[in-house]
Length: 166
Image (cartoon, rainbow, N blue to C red; front, side, top):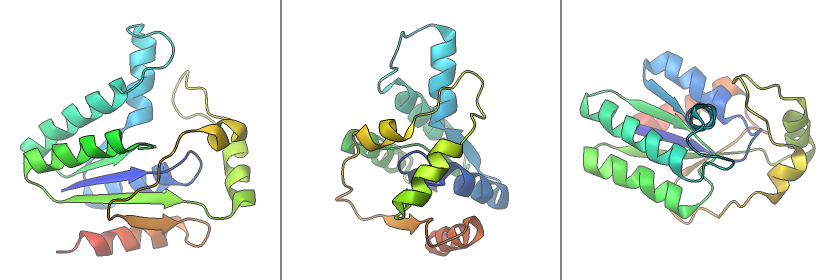
């Protein structure tokens, strides 16, 4: 199974996906970590573009081929990135669960973004205005939506676990 968490910065994707990984003993792929490693390697200057997603999908495919469940944590802002995950799941012939994490309370969302501290060495976190200005396409595909303005992390994990059942 491939579970992909997407959503804007500060919505709670990492908190929820980490908790789910701990419960499922799944492989955890965090695109922020991959992108920062690419930056630190000096391979690409500035914006890494789709490189982090390409690497994450390759790692997901490898782990899925080895029979492991994979949980990916990423913004997943455009149809191309979402399509990449769908292709990876299809090639591996595994079930894909797409989870969009939102925070419908803009005051709370802003508080989270402005209160965050980087947990990845060298990563510069987006400011609130960066979050507001980020391209983020609507999801026309069927997917699960988790609103962290209404749910705590444990409740959100429980909802996703419900979707994981056949």
